[in-house]
Length: 129
Image 1 (tube, rainbow, N blue to C red):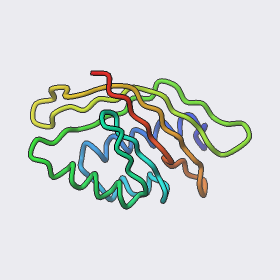
Image 2: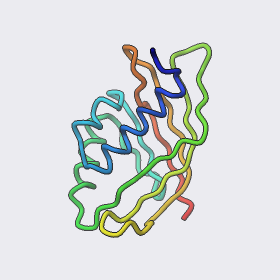
Image 3: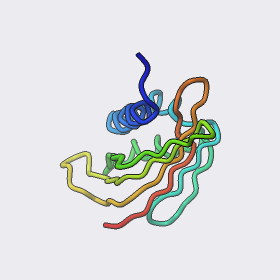
């Protein structure tokens, strides 16, 4: 039984969150499209491409005071005309050492279904706290 697009995106998001928590670059790589774009929440830095994002995550995972980022989907909108979707939700970054919340906010992600799998094409973050 195949998952609905909504559930498939939520499952892929959960896998992405696990990969971030476990600092698993190998698990992150196939979840991003080749040209995935990430716009950070505080300084609006733009990280373009899967390779650039993997480099950024590798650097983040090696940080002395590492943060674990979690995205929690609140709404997913599936396009009826193209294999794309929007995900809206909240995010937080917690200190790996003690779970203290370092920053949090809102995000939007654009997904694209490629070869039967939903992949992250873009993420835009807003820091609120």
